[in-house]
Image (cartoon, rainbow, N blue to C red):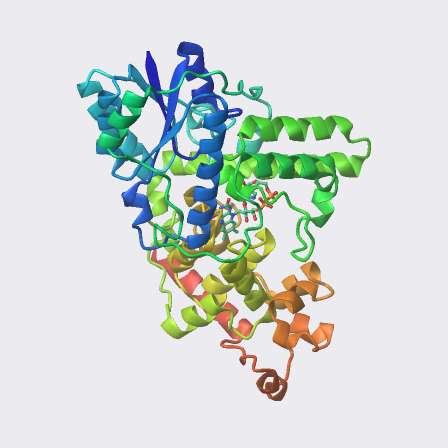
Length: 475
Ligand code: FAD
């Protein structure tokens, strides 16, 4: 009896919960991936992200072939394509792993209905989280809206071991392959063929093997220094696994057990603190996914009432300068250029530029959120939205308002201005102190072809606070 396994953001064969259960029930499990036009034709798709995803799919096809099965590719809307394929191949069931995003939930509902109408069974699993949203609740069974109590509950729950690897399968017959082709199975296109051009190297190579290698290297060394080093953007001190976690090139249980193994090996207090801090980041990932699951309205706008109608300026010329890394604030520009050129930005810098956009330029965080969506190869609706709302003070941060000073952020986290010099090379000969404080004379700026500051931080900070107080009294 054939089972179809529908891959979405779990592009791997190891530690894949749904796939592991499918192989317990049948020796003929065939994979399928749908190039979903509802996603690929959105306005904000980053070429770097599609390139990473297609790379993962290429490797996944090879891995399917190695175990004797295959991964079919469909190029249509899942609500039609998946049920049609399942019916044509006479599959007894379709399995997939759940997701928390509003679009995915709705899509899965329609696919399930269509399959059931055809008499095909459906089985679903929570694979991308260590704990599903229903498992972590407050004493009164409510979802958490504050991270710290969430973390305390989450860390104390027992966590599953990696799921069994997928192996020893029976493939489709020639006749079945022909049938699959008649209902739309195609060869995997390249990102270019889909209209997405990305020439730069990706920080993490696509695929399961590269993600496992990176996890192994990170949990053997940098994880122990994570607490001290993670905030310095010029240092390669974080795992850089975000894209792999977003597309499921690595299983979260595998990641968790690597962190636990590292914890067991830590003999110094600092090393243990490093591992624990990293585990807390994994919990942030789950916190924001749970939040998106329970509060899908987060995807539309501010969580806090006072920010629902905040009077932002939204000046187009300021937004454009921010996007291009031409604000005249070196640390902000360095970060934006890093993202534009690599499809990735260091976490500290994501906070700095998001804070700057919303509190210095007085621009609606949703614009910044969308721009990140257009550029990041690790873009994830929940993490991005959570990060933006945290930075804009519009979300689930118990501190009412947080304002970053770009100069003090730079002094603290890029003390030798190495990061700034890397990404804003026209300023590399300027002395460190001036690069950090941004106190570079107008003449010097002109000589280096570097913009004048587009706003004054102190003035904008006052303005933001005034508007915030006004909003609070009004609402
Ligand atoms: P590490 O420091 O090694 O952390 C390990 C993993 O934990 C990450 O890969 C990620 O999956 C998760 N993680 C770490 N920090 C966070 C966090 N604050 N929130 C949620 N998950 C976290 N992360 C994304 O994966 N996609 C996004 O689109 C995204 N957008 C962001 C936007 C803003 C404004 C901010 C402030 C943060 C955003 N983050 C996002 C979170 C964080 O910046 C990245 O996950 C991190 O920089 C990725 O690098 P890393 O893999 O080396 O992380």
